[in-house]
Length: 231
Image (spheres, helix red, strand yellow):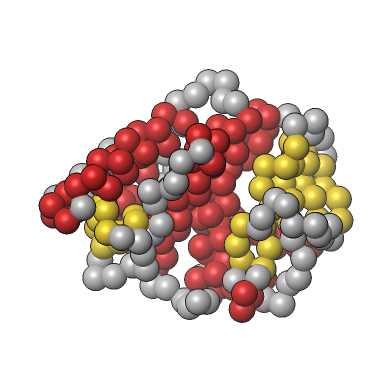
């Protein structure tokens, strides 16, 4: 559902969705189910899984992402201990991604998915972001030259923006192609310059440029609001 969230709720939802997104790529690569499926923010806390699991206060979740460690509400472990322990190990795997000096394609894809999920949370639940993308059609494909597609996003049910199945036989409205893996990695960390990088060839745009410019603006809204994991 496309609803506007209060600022603290939105930040918590975006961070929870980014955790889900990173782990989704890790799980797909390993052939196991994702233990994360965040539940809507409620009473100053958020569950990282749809069946309970780890529960964090909004402030603790920000600390978890920004500093790499934070304690969930301890009652989580009494409600669903197995799911909680699986989730803790999953969080450690995600945290380790950001310490890689030479990440692989799948590791960059996981980090990129995390940042895109945060952007999508803003696209769907931030008033200004929703207004910017209102009425837009077509998908955006992010690819790495000679390595393939990282992720594809677009509006779907009721105008909600989401990650699209890579198998969808639909030509994207716009393609952003990174020159190499390292540039894609820095982009996922919010360390690229949207004004100069196209000029210097770090990435190339093709298709309906205003669409990617709008999405990029929403992405910067999210990056400016949210903590980034420490490298």
